[in-house]
Amino acid sequence: MRHLLMHALICTLLGTGATPLGAGAWLQPTGRGFASTTTRLSWAQEQTVQNWPRAELRYDTFYLEYGASRRLTFGTDLGRSISGGGKAVGFVRFALLGTGPLRIAGELGLGQIEGVRALRPGLSVGVGLEQGWLNADLLAEIREAEGTDYKLDLTLGVRLPKKTRLILQLQSGAPQGDSPFARLASSVVLPLRRRLQIEIGASQGLTGDDSSGLFMGLWSEF
Image (tube, rainbow, N blue to C red; front, side):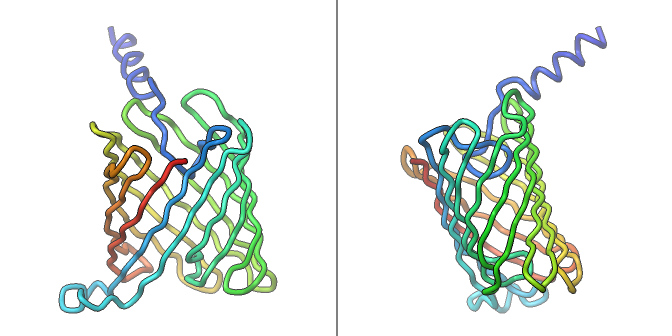
């Protein structure tokens, strides 16, 4: 009986392999794409309430993926780097393990970070769950004569009825010459139209980051 219960639990967790729309270990289907644009606002934690009408920091991001083949996805990542500077990176993601609930993908990006040429290798590992997904993204941003910054994001996504998603993410990084940081971000994704969704969320620094933030973005499938 115990073995039967364990087998049922595993089948429930890994059953349908529900996946996220973009990023992570899942590649885009051939000829399909995903794009998102997000605005992020943040305040110092000790002054969030009194200063909420005037954000201390605002930045915008743009992210695009397109499935070139079953095993290759090309993309563009514009926004803010691990160190906090501006970034513009083009990348290719390739499947290392592309079938079943467990997915593994490698990534190689090239572009500019804070105006300096940069190489960005990465590795993503994901597990599809019946009602969501788990994903880990590890990236290194290697800049000429500037050293290397590292980033690790752990994501739990939950699919709810009516195409609603809940996302909980632990974001961490180790910038060159600066203290490591970790922050928690949570959001809800709601459908607007058939291929258009809105994401609304908040973030809170845990260590090495004394900010609180809000963000809102649009997701589009094409």
